[in-house]
Amino acid sequence: MEPDIAKILRMKKQDQSDAMLSIFKGLLDKDVEAISTAMKGLIEEVNRIANDEEYIRLCETNLNLVRSLPEDTAEKIIRSRLKAQADLPDSERSRDSKNLAEALKNVDRDGKIGKIIQKIGA
Image 1 (cartoon, helix red, strand yellow):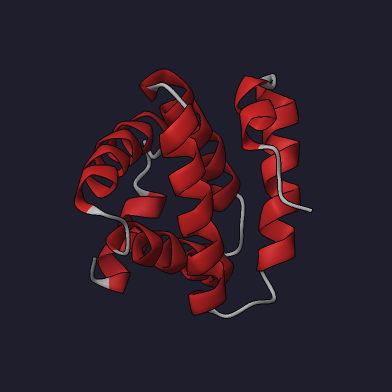
Image 2 (tube, one colour):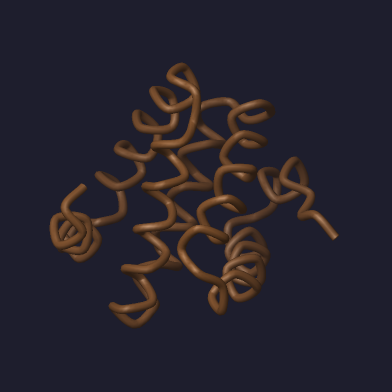
C-alpha cells in the first residue's frame, strides 16, 4: 500500500515521524537504486501537494530520523536521497534543493549530516 503523503503532511510532528520511520524501515533492506526510486516518487508527490512550509517540515522530520540512524545506514539513505533529487526534472529539483537546504540548516546544527554528504562527495 502506498503511503498517504497528504495525510502524513498534516500529522503532528511525532505521528509524522512515526509514519516516515515506518516507510524508511520498509526501504532499508533494499539497494540504493531501489531506495532512490521510491524516494523520487515520494519527492514528486510532496512537490505536487505540499506548500513550502509543509515540505520543509517533512524534510526536517526525515533529517531527524536520518540523524538517529547508524552512520552506515544514514549514509545509504542520504546517498539514495541525493540520487533521487538528481533524477528529478529541473523545476522540481530546484524546489527540492531549496527546501532540503532550509531543513538541513534548521536540523543539522552539529554538522553530522553535512559530514556524510561531504564523505559521499555530493
